[in-house]
Image (tube, rainbow, N blue to C red; front, side, top):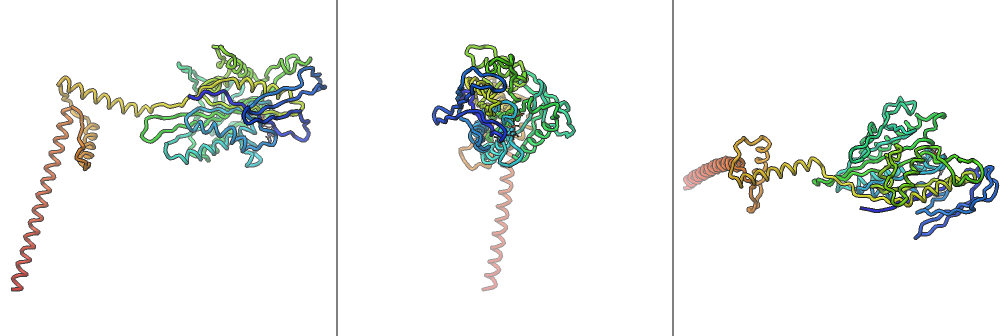
Length: 465
Ligand SMILES: Nc1ncnc2c1ncn2[C@@H]1O[C@H](COP(=O)(O)OP(=O)(O)OP(=O)(O)O)[C@@H](O)[C@H]1O
C-alpha cells in the first residue's frame, strides 16, 4: 500500500499582450518545494478598494511559469503517475482553475502545433510504448471518455456522428452496488490495442465534445470531462490479474460569484457558478478536516465518479491552472487556496490485484477431484459410473507424456480412482502388445535380410570357386 497526500502543482498561463500582469513571484526550493507569492495591490481594482492583506503565499510541489513547455509538464506530472498505473495502481490527474486559465490546454493540448500536445496524448504515447517494451506480461487496454454537464453524464465515445447537441449523446447514469462501488451504466469502454487506436478514440471524443457545444451552451466551460485509460495485465501462466485506471480530468471553470459584491469581501465570501464544483469543495473540506466520518461524495455525479481519487485508492495529482493577470488575481488566490486544502488529503493506493476466476474454477475442480480420490481410499468404496470423455482425454494425455518422458524416475499419477487406474493399465497393455508386435515384425525383417545376404555370399563363393 502506498500512502500519499494528493500532490499539487501550479501552472501559470502566458499573458496575452493586452493583459496587465498581476504581481507574483516564484521561489523554487529543491527540498521544500516551490512557493508562489501573489501581491494584491492596495489600489482600486475592478471598482473595489482592497483593504485586505497585500501578499499571499502558497506552497506547491512545483510551479510551472508562463514559459513552461508541454513536455516538461508531462515529464514532471504525468509520467510518474502513468508509471504507477502501469504497475497496477489507480491514478488521477485533474486540472482545476477558472475559465480560460489553461485546463484544456494542459490536459488535452492545443491544436495548432504538434508540440502543444497535452497530457492525454503524451500519456497514451508513453503508456503504449511501455506496453510494447514489456514482453513479460499480457496487457489489455481500454479507454472511456465521459462528459458531465448539469449533473448528467454523456458518453463522448459514441461513434454515430449525428450528435449535434450534448443531449444526443448516450446518457450515462450512476449505480452503486452493495459494496458501495460505483458503476457507470451506458459508458462505453472501447478497446485500444495501440497508440493509434487510442488517439483515434480521443479524437472521436473531442469531436463529439466540440459538436455538442454551441455558443449558448458553453459546455467546455461548465462541464467536466474525464478521459480514462483502463489497463489490465497478467503474467503468462499466472492466475493473478492487475487492473488499474488512470483518470485524466478537465474540470469546469472554477470562477466564483461574489455573494456580497462590494465591500472588500471578494477574497473570502464567494460561491461557485458551477454547483458540482461547490460539492467538490465540500468533499475536499470534509476530507481535509480530521475526524469527519461522513464525506458527501453522493451529492454530485462528479464527486461520485472521482470518489476513489479523493481520499481513496488512488495516486492523485492536481494541477492548479492560474491566469495571473491583474483582473484575475482574486480567482487565482481562490484556486491556490483550494489547492492548499487538497494537499492535505491523504490517499491510500493499493495494488489492484485479483485472481482470474477461470483459473480459480480450474484449481477448485482439481481440489475436488483430489478430495474425491482420498475419500475413495479412506472408505474403500469405488465409483462405478463411466469416466467422462473429458477425463479420458486427460488420461490419454497423461499416459502420452509419461511414455515420452525418458526420465526413469517419472511416475504416472492418476490418483486413487480404480476406473482411472484400470484405464491406464488397459492402455499400457495395448501399447505393450503393439510394441511386441512391431518388435516381432522387425526381428523377422532382420532374419529375412540375413538369409538373403547369406544366399548372396553363397552364390558369390560358388562363382569364384
Ligand atoms: N500554457 C499555455 N501556453 C499557450 N497557450 C495557452 C496556455 N494555456 C492556455 N493557453 C491558451 O489559452 C486559451 C484558454 O485556455 P484553455 O481553453 O485551455 O482554458 P480552460 O481553462 O480549459 O477554459 P475552459 O474552462 O473554458 O475550458 C486557449 O486558447 C489556449 O490555447
